[in-house]
Image (cartoon, rainbow, N blue to C red):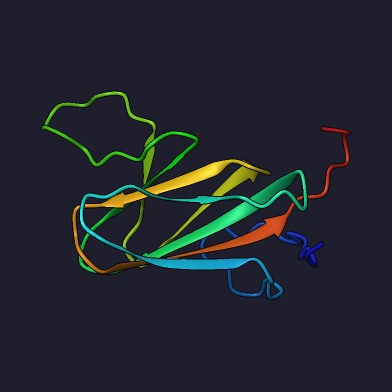
Amino acid sequence: MALITPWTALNMTDDFGLRPSNLKYSATLPASADRSMTVPGDAPRYMAIIKAEGAAQVYVAVNQPAETPIGSTFAATGSEMVPYGGVLCREVEADDVLHFITAGTDIDVNVVLYSLKSTNGI
């Protein structure tokens, strides 16, 4: 079983000050191809810190293929944009599948997971 680093503070601006996690994943995304990673089952829930670097936006979805926006009108989507040079932080569960897509090429994505401890039995 992997050592689980707990999420100890909520910092929505960036993730500086967090303890190092041993659950780190990275990939270089090709253009217009869905890439996925499965959240490990070592803990029931995690805080996923997602960063992307490159010349194009990255979109992420949980348990469904990620989509890039199509057209100039608003439409329902299951994907969220990872901000340029920023951090997207979302709660995920063990065995969730994170899907990533970009219209650009050679976009680096990094995912760091921190376990969440439950105080209410959920």
